[in-house]
Length: 228
Image (cartoon, rainbow, N blue to C red; front, side, top):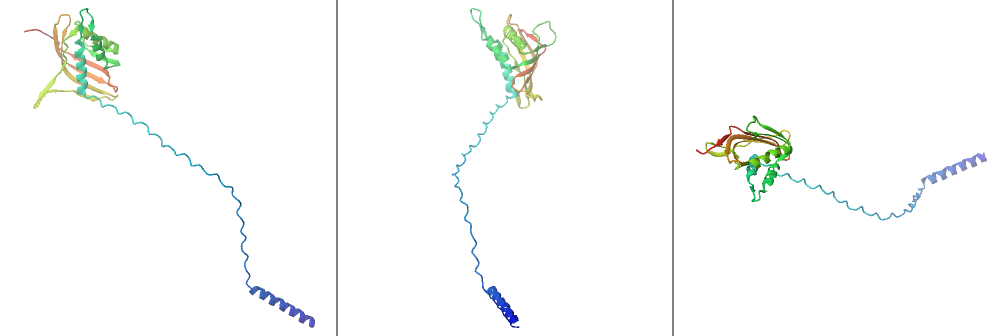
């Protein structure tokens, strides 16, 4: 009996001790802070070089405006009429003729096709010239055999408009422009100074480079001019 009492008292004391321990507030332990690992200092970074903005391409050169059809017609007529404006020296040397021929040939493309009146009285129909070399032979012959060249554009008068030069023009599908106009041709033969004239028309096709690709020169009803 005594032993049971001792065991009971021991258990009671143990329970009281546990209850006392549970009621006593426990001081929380401070969290352990770990020192951060030592970091190797980074070398100072060099700022990237400033990028130069790309240079814009130079603006394309503006093309000069295309000549007006009237200007093209007048230029062609003026160079043709100038073919007789050269002279012979006392020694018989030609002065300025080749320059006038070359000036006229500046207008033509290398592969030009020209349809021109015949220079032979017995030939019927136009002459077809292919290539710049053959056209130059025709121009050269004009400069040698004709004088007082006077090709002029016909003018039209209607209502309040007097003496207007009519130029017909159209853009070509393959580039360039075509023009046509009426003329009155007049010239004298160099060998005997006999003068001739006739109405006609001119058709010119200029390519995209401003050179003549095709020429058609018609002069019909040619008559000799005689004194009354």
